[in-house]
Length: 104
Image (cartoon, rainbow, N blue to C red; front, side, top):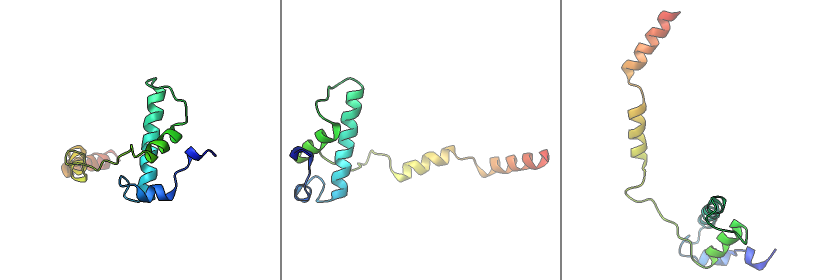
């Protein structure tokens, strides 16, 4: 395995972007590798290395950042509100139950 294909724990612990978390580092590199792979599949870039190798190199060069969810991002409350709009009301469920009971 080439030296460029390794990310050492010291690199992760020293990284301010992932706050020393191995999990965050892996997630950051995985997201970058997926992005690079998608760009390649769509024909925007030509790859000379594997997407994971490029992502690891970018991590080691401190070019990756983890963006936390902001105020405008989808939150649990927004998801609940959207689900409430789609969910049938109790009256509709009662009518459907009565109709089903009458059918038998």
